[in-house]
Length: 427
Image (cartoon, rainbow, N blue to C red):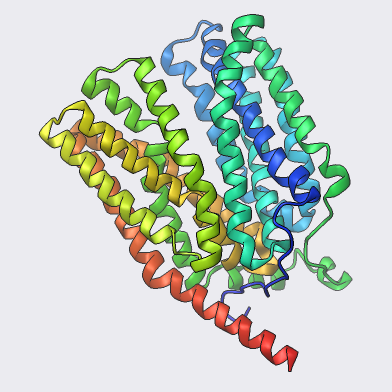
């Protein structure tokens, strides 16, 4: 690496949607998200059935996210040491097992343990899948691959709660977790045949020395470069912005500030999906055509402006119609940003330690997402809603500036170096 960020040599572009990508990438992404969405409406009801308070019941949501956060770095190391394919297959299988165990949990602590495992399992599939895209995806269609994956997951998450609510009402809440398990197994089944290991080949001596001091130093040298660290800072800031938005803080604000009911919240969520999903699919085409930061920088700049607009509605106590306008603008920006950082990360990731890179990257992102609603809640309580929204906007603008001034430059230099290398090789 010699202190420089590695950009994988561009691979020839093939058909974006073929038999392998359809059955090992896009359909599994939608099926797994659909299964998670089906279980979503059953989780609060199931937690309440154990006769615990609201605060204790909230742990069933927290431990799932905690499992995903704790699993980031260990999963990254396993991806590099054990292989991408094994982790890819193990994640959904472990998710299915944990869901079946959730369905027969006899105590609340037991339920929490199974949910923690489920969160870790989800992280295993996400990281291994993204690493395999970075290993094999042609650079000129990387944006469409990643945003296609994110878009299919969004479709699954949008449809899942409605299906889960119907199943829970007809056959009880436990059936939702059984459905999640079955969908997880069905989603990963084609990958046993279609998916091959994509990890870079290593010599026998390299494999024997993988745990040695030299290998550890090489890993640190690859990860502790200025471009990689700059990207990590940008990821933290952007997740510090989006964490509150994806966690439903704007919905909670609408309930407390405007007194809206669940039907209004449901309508807002549906509107966000209708507006957002087409944008998510289109951003991949824009990134592949005009550059990797072509949507990320405008997305976070617009998000910053939308949050300033939201802050002004809170400060001026504007009518609910103004809040709806600000909410839709926030959703447009959030959808524009979906998948952007994954695409950029897949290009910046050092080839020999991609698993570790993605593990640390996800940990930093999860940290920002977790801190975001905490920061928002503290500021809302101490300084008011307007100050809380302004804090999110500052993070969004800061992330956009770093992406525009630092990350874009890194990607451009790496692309120029790769082009020169390809030209010299042809000569």
